[in-house]
Length: 257
Ligand code: ADP
Ligand code: MG
Image 1 (cartoon, rainbow, N blue to C red):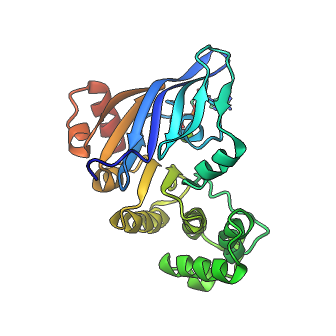
Image 2 (cartoon, rainbow, N blue to C red):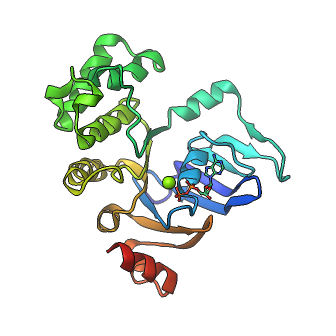
């Protein structure tokens, strides 16, 4: 890993909704193969940060690079518009990441198989046969081979979320972003999804994970970031973070453990 360039480089981003300054000067570099978890209280800006990092939200300040490609540079004035790269380059940037949401966000009217193979066919122009084979392989990998023809409403939440992960991976992203992927699930189903994520971690998938599952974060992360009030209050190796001298971090960890 040493010597390589960051896959994701976020420099000094800021974001406000009206008077609410939600992100205040956040920087983050993620190296290939690295797993970074983001923890912090509700409302601290975790989702907004992921949304800015994946271009679902524009930022007011700062810049964002994927693999050295500038994806977004915001003007330095508070109301200056974000400047994105050309459409062509943006398409290249989009190839870099996959996104898994808290509430699965599967297409309800598509079968499981179609949910997973649709984007590769439409976005990547992957031939149908090849996309189907890859989708079935991913479903098999996550224990869902027999669910290919089911519809999302026929699956448990844990199964739906595993389809969500398979769908994100079908585009072969270099980074997988996950926003509280298990928070809508009960503990038993959470374990199934965490198992899938641990499997990806062991394959060195680069991931940025917002989670309240502290034991999981401690086990898989190379680095944990504690966000509060739109700022990074603490960041480091899990052992460092869990032994943080900051009372605020200890209180938060204590409450969730
Ligand atoms: P977290 O994911 O850590 O719970 P969020 O990023 O969802 O935090 O929210 C951070 C703050 O930004 C909250 O005060 C929330 O109300 C505000 N916020 C988030 N999205 C919007 C939006 N689209 N419009 C206005 N305010 C928003
Ligand atoms: Mg959130």
